[in-house]
Length: 225
Length: 223
Image (tube, rainbow over all chains, first blue to last red; front, side):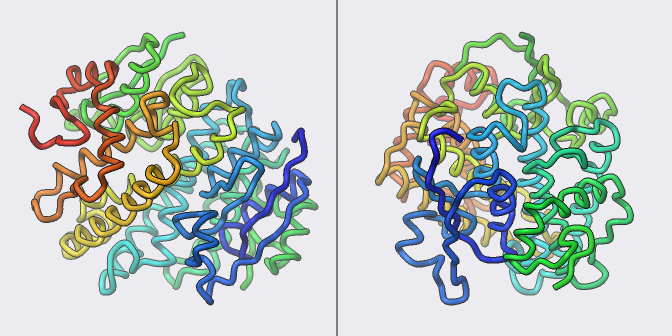
């Protein structure tokens, strides 16, 4: 990244901002962590709403102003550094963008429904919402498994790190740990994906973040609370 | 370069058709038929494994997801949104993703309120979705009034088109008129969309896709 930029990540450990922290560590970009005290309402404060008007983390303050939304930040970092994903003139760019936004729109959103089923559907409809989200999640991870098996994309690979591996890794972590039975995710059905995630979680950058954020030794493939 | 848009008029693929018309790039339309099973056809699943439109066939292979296609087109041809070197790209990407993963599913929940939690929850779902959309529109209204971003003007029209189609659906598709979205409380957003729907490219797509004379701001009164 030239020239060097000042970067501040608004963060809470094991929230979606951890995905961005993983990318920043992998890129070895100097950055400041601004810890958000979510329980005390920090995300609703006027100061924070100037960073992200929607009031969510992650948000990344940059010399170009603040960026929010996980996929937006990841793509911006890829394009600024030329690393962790195909650049704009790469023939793989279209497929990478498609699956990055699929992960954000389809997988991440279904995961949020699983964790907060009352949000889209209201109290009283949580069970139905959770059951529907579970079916979506299994089907969507199945598409990712088939993608890896059929195409071996280098932007979601065990051979080199990428923003999408870290993004899906954190989503899978939560899907294994957080839902109640019978909705707990098992990775046995997704061996290709598991090998990609295993390669990511053992990288030096991931180990640093796992330590800083208290994610345990195998945060993606065998996560523990 | 041959581009092929898998398309049904007034589906999300109309957002991509608007972008292609703005760019003036030649493209082919591949008409899709839901009832004929086109979305489940193995040949289409090779284009988009999810079985959804929009999908765009390109010399680099197929691309899907509305926001992904917009960004790919903008990098290839320029003029739809901030370029890679523009500082405004940071804010644009943030709001594009907000529209893609928050506004878009909220509007789909208004149109198909039975999907997220079943038919018994549909009425409550539709009400909650409308409340959410009004909150999201308020964020956009504040954005426009405080920052007037160039990427929500006809100079960089992709996000305006995306919002225009989504809010069109929210205003005319919910069955219960009381559960339809109105732009009236959001005058700055209304002004942005009113300018966008009068661009030559938007007028061409309104004609080809039968969207009526004011597709974004008054979709219900199309003749």
